[in-house]
Image 1: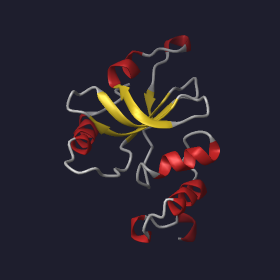
Image 2: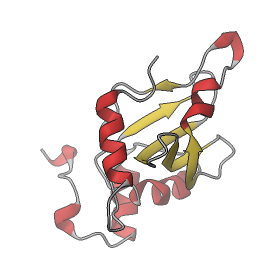
Image 3: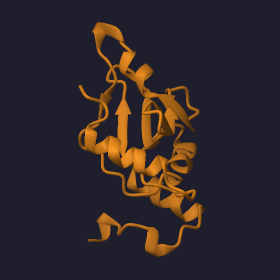
Image 4: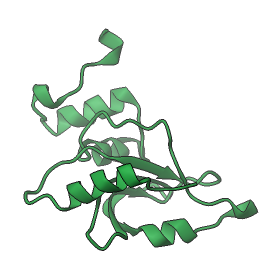
Length: 136
């Protein structure tokens, strides 16, 4: 599987090249299909290899940091399975919300309730919050 398509690469590179520090929305979610590791990535450095985002290796301590695309592509787990891209991932919050939500539950989560709770704890202005799907 192609982890980073050309379209995703362009968005990641643009985020990484931003002149001002911005709380980007995660662009891509990668995961280990036979393990607990997950990465929510929002930026790619000009070197074309260094990705930045929320990294969770499954030990209960997700953290913001950098990871090598080449290393992720080279990883092979049991049965020769490699890292995969979540084809259905659609981020609804800025990257800063996901580590706060992960702190609450010990792993990267997409649970709407936890993400909203994390956004509120970070005092994000209401216009930046997506509408609550449960209220629609």
